[in-house]
Length: 220
Image (cartoon, rainbow, N blue to C red; front, top):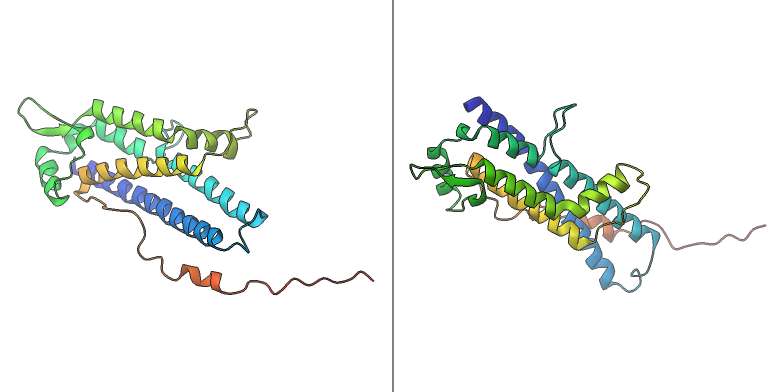
């Protein structure tokens, strides 16, 4: 059982890095939008603005799809859903004493939807609750996942329109919330926020003129 828990914790760390990257990318994208909106001289329809936005949406949609996808039969993939299904298939690998101890580590924040009380009154992983949590995750990420499948990963005949920023934000929060619950379940760690606090200095590149004034050469 301990070998399973070690493997799950390794997987959790991989997923954690992906969730943090989602928030880092969103923070930078939001800041760029704030800068553009505050400066009328650059706030106009422009291919560069569109390039930044479309690449942010595409990269985020693919990362969210990767984090929420179902298990593949052809090759072993890793996602929040894959990890949860493995836990649900072997719920007794996480004993009650671990759950109670991790609750204390996390300041009393329980992954309630993933747990139930058995006949002895002890907390244990609830396979039904896990499946319900996965269904909720899929529902909240459905718009973004459909765009990743039909527009980015494939040339679908019925092209899907890009999701709105609000759709993307909701999907990011859905993944982060469920990851937090799994993190408490496996390690006792609750992330108060995933918003980056150490991105200082990245704006310095925007303070330097990238090109000089436009010059026009008359044709000879």
